[in-house]
Length: 110
Image (cartoon, rainbow, N blue to C red; front, side, top):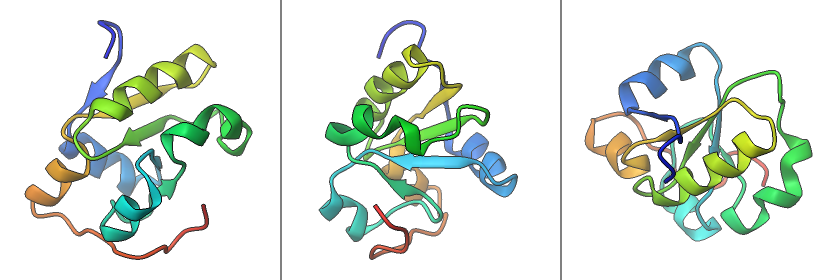
């Protein structure tokens, strides 16, 4: 993560989700199916650069992975592309450990 990568915690993500935030999960499909933040959209790290047109530049994008490393790198990519993006510290692991619900399966198209 660069020194300028904005990072939020799961508390802030929970508040953003309640306001209809865009949440992008950059893990691999198998990881996503095993458990993800409800309402998140799967866009694997290796595909994000070629799928930027699927995201709304007028809304903040919250990026989540397993622990926060991949999401930080992808947040930097999004910000360099003009998005208002935020990496979620601790990722899906922190989300689940906080007692929040985790969905399994592919509830959203990828």
